[in-house]
Image (cartoon, rainbow, N blue to C red):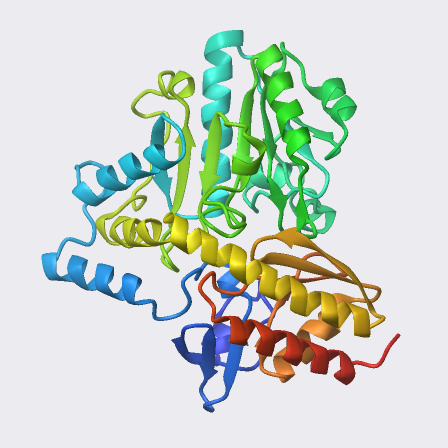
Amino acid sequence: MTTTKTGREALLAVYAPPEAVFVEGRGAWLFDDEGRGYLDFTSGIAVTSLGHDAPEVRRAIERVLDTGVIHTSNLFRTEPAEALAQELIELAFPGSVFFCNSGAEVGEAAFKFARRWARSAGGAAKHEIVSFGGGFHGRLFGTLAATDRPRYREPFEPLMPGVRWATVGDLASVDAVCSRERTAAVVIEPVQGEGGVRPVDPEFLRGLRRICDEREVALVFDEIQCGLGRTGDLFAHEASGVRPDVLGLAKPLAGGLPMGAVIVAPHIAETIRPGDHGTTFGGGPLVASVARAILAKVSTPEFLAGVRDRERALSEAVDALIASEPRLKGRRGRGLMQGLLVDEAAGPLVAAARDEGLLICSAGPDVLRLLPPLNVPIHELHEGVERLARAFQRVPAP
């Protein structure tokens, strides 16, 4: 006997989305099936960095469709993936690139590559991963083990063993758990996203680099959310002057198509052998072509200067709102990745903002996260903050 389900009921209930069904997008706007427009300050969780229906994305897709070659698998060579890999290492640091399909897969691959390198240098005992409180690296068994969200972790334990924990800003805590004999990698987000939009002090990143060098440990930067222009630099770690051994990129890389990339330094790349890892879809001609178009746009000095201009405009507008709204306790972040601290639960305010036609998300229980497109018009930044101000009026103070 079969039971008829609605389209919504047919989806596995791992999410609880609101009722609106989005059917069209233009720039920083999404439109539902009733024709209502919403300013999208989530960007698909930092994915659609050039907004919806970006001409660069459209043109790249059309060019690939004209060739008829959307997929070949990685049994064969295709030009877009090779060209994109070359462009990424020219912009980041010398090394090699592995393409996959998601941020969680980036984290899994980064851990595997770090362990492969560490094992070749120090034996099987050198396998542990050092992660940090507030860190978020994904929901697969390896990345979830290195993610500081007990609510996400507990239903699926035991997870991957060998993860040790340290505190951001406290090098002594790293020193206590990072071992030359046991540790393969230290993983950190230069700006913690899900953990509350918390930028990491550049001096702390420099301290991590020193510890990793002293103990022959791979330093992994997770820029899945904060990379590729979101902070006003192409890579979020640039301000620290630190070069990681492994760099993870994903969310905005292919403009909304599923794609991730792991860049590994030469000393790690030389330990990887055919068969050590794999992917059927990663780096296919369609996603790689779109990623090349995105990268060409967001890596220019003019574009990044525009992100910094928008950061100033957004910061000024938010600071003015903080001055007039006592329930807002401050903001933190970099570039167009801003977290607003509230003294109450963030969820009702996220819902109220949606009622005002503004899409935002939370970053923990008491942080409102703003992730507008990197090319959003400045007047729409102001309009978004105005809608957020009205959202506070909708929610009674606790």
